Image 1: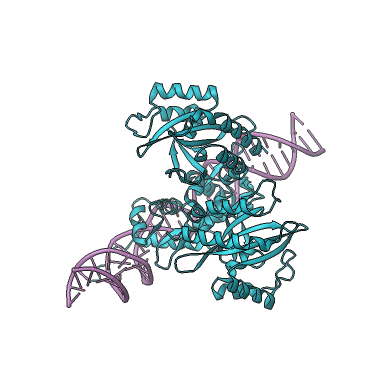
Image 2: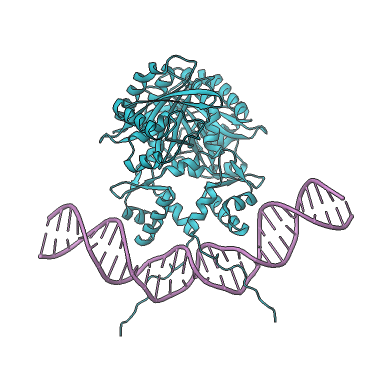
Length: 257
Length: 257
DNA sequence: CTCCGTCGTTCCACTCAATGAAACGGGGGC
DNA sequence: GCCCCCGTTTCATTGAGTGGAACGACGGAG
């Protein structure tokens, strides 16, 4: 009689818990640093009870934190763990003093980034007092084809990665002033020859110029890139090339230990 | 005939996957930034096949990375996610310029930390050229009872937390020069009254003095602590009190936005 | 005041994703 | 040759994970 309908039961195609958990974590972004349960469940595409259960466990583990309002935030535990990433804080630790030198000697911003797939991830940023506000955020991603750091990382990346980036037509990218296809290819060759890159890009009207150089490990593999960013109205960017190259070498030596 | 023995089957008491995954991540430490599968399985107390399966999934998700040697490392993806923690990089972003001022104006190291349970977690550290090497690592933990930052965070923490710390007998702690029980209690009262803390501790023979002050939010809740660390042979630490207090207020204002 | 929408939450019958003992192949030391 | 430890694959077993439904609380609109 009591016509019992199937209640719950597994999802059509089961998806590993870990994938879902990291999808939850991935829902946060600079624009959305805090999220309600409903938003989380919506963004991650998970049923509410599932999102709740996962979020609670993540809070218990310290990966998330919960404000009094009930909204969720990324937790400190993740920072503790992430600070052990050799390509992150490990690298940063060695590079920081040299980056400070570079900041005082040159431009408005000094950036340190590493390649992750077909993007550059910003590991550290130092900014001079009263520098132009830039959109670059530590932990954020930037394109490989239209930034100084990106060009360096791309030029010394495996062929496979280069082809993947070159296959895309970037001509619609407003910020990109580095050309596409053959043009970009020539640029990369130049970067390999000179062992530095100079690149301009347009950001909300103003054009910014970056000078970048590779950081290498013992075996001369490029592991990161340092760059100085200056506004176009400043002194000729070429002035900074020797300083950037020198600092990149210094960091390479410090990181080789 | 083919005497089939039960193969595998669930563990005696099933343990959530997420707990295990984070246990794996928690196995890494400053001394052990890279781990082999065997080490991972050993440290996390997981059967080898289970450790392998989890580690592989974490690599797929970017939470771990694998060197050519096969050893595992913390991955960059975690840094990307962690950089969205409001109490981590969010706070840091606002504090950094003021911390630089403080560094140039005063001591050897400038520290920014927040409380996580009964420990202080270091969110940022700036060090002067040629400063004493200190064991403090960004992302690392320090005790609440024996550091300047710790005392500030403890003094303004909920009663519950204070009692938990006070209940422990710290007299065996070699580094602690702040006393225990009633002594420590009096110290905390003083910190609340003065709104700054001065604390010394012994580190490998040399004694270091830190001057710390609270960073507060709009509602005057203490959310972090800034401190300057100087070697004992330097100028009187008290000299730095006004600077530290002023910078703490500046950061409070900047973080209130 | 009532109504309605949305939010976080609990319940629980249903399964498949997760499990780990066993067995395997390969490399390094002795 | 032998042994030992490493990472890996296999597969019978089962409880951890699941989500539709239902609930109480809050708040804004009527």
